[in-house]
Image 1 (cartoon, rainbow, N blue to C red):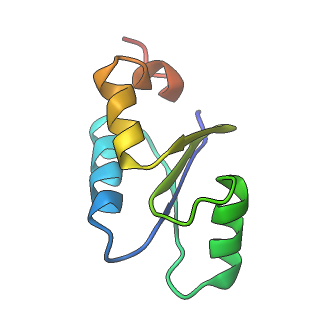
Image 2: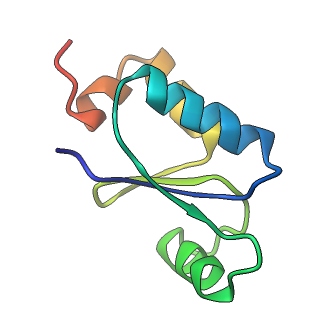
Image 3: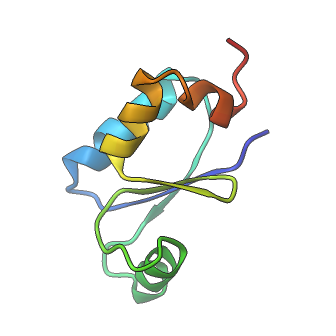
Length: 87
């Protein structure tokens, strides 16, 4: 099973879109809500090379970026292979 981590906040519409896209793909993911959690914020910033926006999405060791980056991968037909989905 492919490991997917997504760092989110409760009020982020892009986080909601990213989670919906991953759910449509039928994959499980680990969600980390960073609201008011300095440790998770620090982990997200460290793993994303300094990015402070949400969502921050990771597929295995690959840093996807945010929702727009995830959507582009999907539109270009590259997301399924990253997720380990047979086309």
